Length: 80
Image 1 (tube, helix red, strand yellow):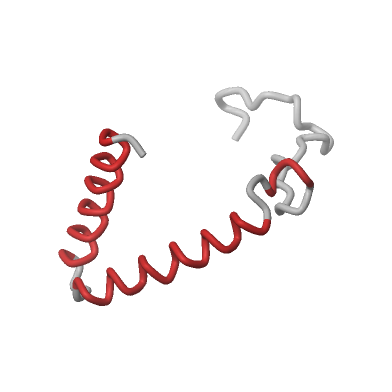
Image 2: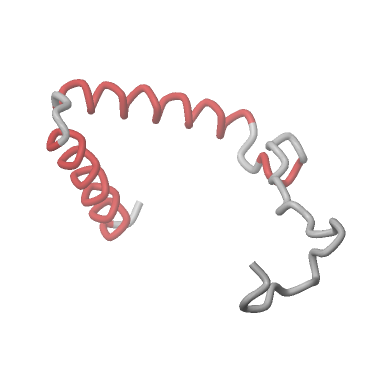
């Protein structure tokens, strides 16, 4: 692991901890929550390192279509 990667990760963790402690959380609680989430993420990654590639990840929702009548008509000033 490169030194730059470790420094970047540490800075991000410090930012998150500072933000949550600033909002009233205890630092020990923040570290416990982070540790639990990292453990869960590591297990999930060990099971399937690229879930988006195999179709097991949730499908992304498409934007709703504008195929209803009048969708292409533009409202002109004074029409309302």
